[in-house]
Image (cartoon, rainbow, N blue to C red; front, side, top):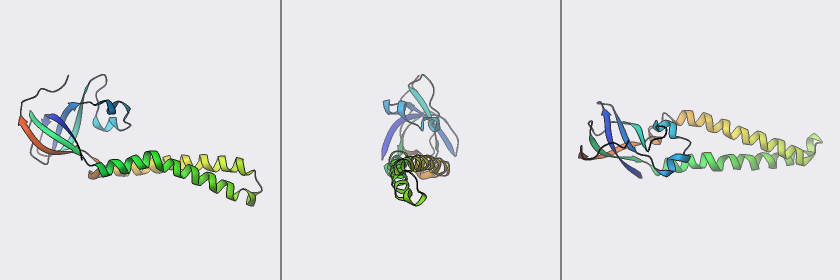
Length: 151
């Protein structure tokens, strides 16, 4: 599990908004919009379910399970390459049947399957965005009001 320290800036019985310091890895993350990252700021606010009854000013630890992160990494980085290679191989295998140039058919089928991979990723991402497994969560409360939010 990946954890990060932050401070609750607003909370109600169901939701907490946790402000934390953005790490270097956030700069290149494609999902930074889901964290409501603030432009030109080292801070970011993350909306999480308030499962531990955290209140405004509480210093908390938020977590993210690693298994879903690995699944998403596979979907984003490996899956398109697998479909590209499979499409290129299928294009080359079916080229003689259609009396076409194997290289050209391979390139066309590879590009189509690569684009198909991103369509699948988009559809899967929309479905997974509502799945709790892929969202950060509150782990525990550390101390009340001992840190100030990053500016």
